[in-house]
Length: 380
Ligand SMILES: Cc1ncc(COP(=O)(O)O)c(C=O)c1O
Image (cartoon, rainbow, N blue to C red; front, side, top):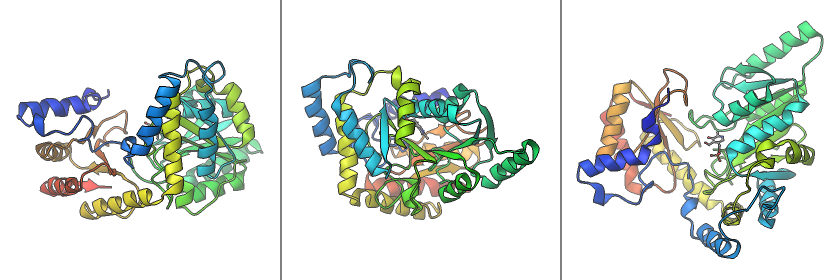
């Protein structure tokens, strides 16, 4: 069962602080949560707000229909060109959410393969796409490429030929906060003639010197004949909407077979405008990404959380200790959610905090102090 508390993140905190008579000290809703995915704090960036407001006045609140009917505002095309170029890919398709992008991409591409390999820690949107595809699927242990190779070898021996397959993974895992070995996955699909779908939901804007994602971080280019990137504008890019960056032939397929594209209302022009501004901002200014990197390094140092560019920090330990840690955080008006199954595997409850540029400098001291009050907690 899921944890209902998880759905009430800010309400719980507000009630708690109300009870303690501390309600007035609070900043606006949402700005006290340590679990925000707004890594670069772009949702509050003046340029994005200005562009969204302008477009809202000009074009109204809604898209009025799906892209194929009435909702194909020209900003969709501009955003697709911008995100494709940002990701070093040849073309892109924009969706209303990242969830839809994943479900639709796997659904549309499933006709090209006979077998899927899915990482055991993949996000629910990837899992749902896989379930809907009804393809034979092997769930491989987290990041275990050798497991896939052995399975392929076994199949080759048994059937005398290789199945057409696609590996589905994330570049930065949303609950684990670790990275996948993308260069090794790339080599695998090259060697064994497969496809690779990588969800860059959390990597976009956070990984790589310019925030272009997992491949930039790995210093590697990717070939669109083999690799399909998906992602979202709703995290480091501060907005809403999903994307698939891929070969134009795959884009064609998505246009007709991506059900989340065909059968859902397009993004409002104001959202498209702020998404586009976010991408342009990162193209112009890599200092923002560097700012996040520096902050991640600082927080990781203070929590002994290892050396990684990932802003996602799971904090694990005995349940009682995690709850006390949360209590200490509450005392300094900070909120961090405890994440329960099925969002994470059974027995691996954790507190998930994500470092963002929206944190105030003194939060790091408050978190460090709360963390070190509880012994045996592990971060990262
Ligand atoms: C790894 C991953 N993929 C996809 C999504 C879906 O993105 P969106 O929130 O834009 O639907 C999320 C967000 O929760 C995610 O964490």
